[in-house]
Length: 100
Image 1 (cartoon, rainbow, N blue to C red):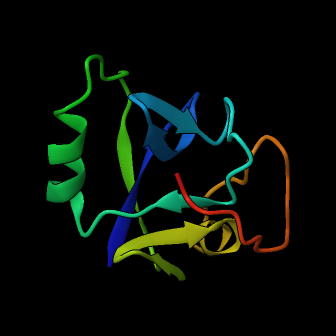
Image 2: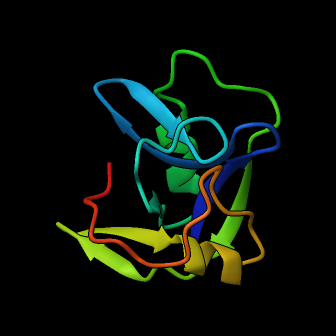
């Protein structure tokens, strides 16, 4: 089962663009899904590339329901199904926005 990166204050790690990370409780930047990692090891390898890692990082198991260019993502509904909170802007539909 895949995992997403979570943080108590920042929420769910959505993705990264141009070196900027996006989180569900900060600024989801219009995204409606979160990047999934194959397992905790892959997530840890990705986090190791960050300049600064916030304390409190955890991993949550999810079932990805979106595939784009070979990468897996979890919609807000899939994240809710895994027991995770939604975005700061609650949305119930799965939009066609391309993942970050």
